[in-house]
Length: 119
Image (cartoon, rainbow, N blue to C red; front, side, top):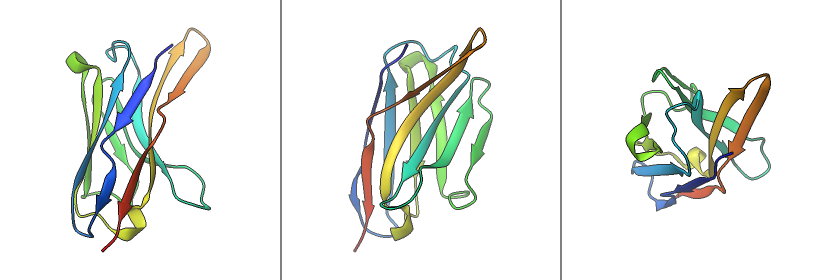
């Protein structure tokens, strides 16, 4: 089991930057994949970025070149650096951690942090 505490959201103008942080309650060294998802009002939750235990990354097309995901296993933390923010990036952002525990998929979520991009 793991608790995820995500933070760093806020109100920012278009073109601005934010850095989200997700601190895990246990070592992230053995967590296969950690990522960020977002959910805008009236829309389904969608993948933003994911990073594996070998630091392979994958991004949604809509954020490629603007967002960067990274992980610091020594601090049990995953970051999402968001640059060039657009109004359509407005959403609640959720941290996610998942790994296989034998034949069982373990899947955990943070509480979410609001990102609002507006002038």
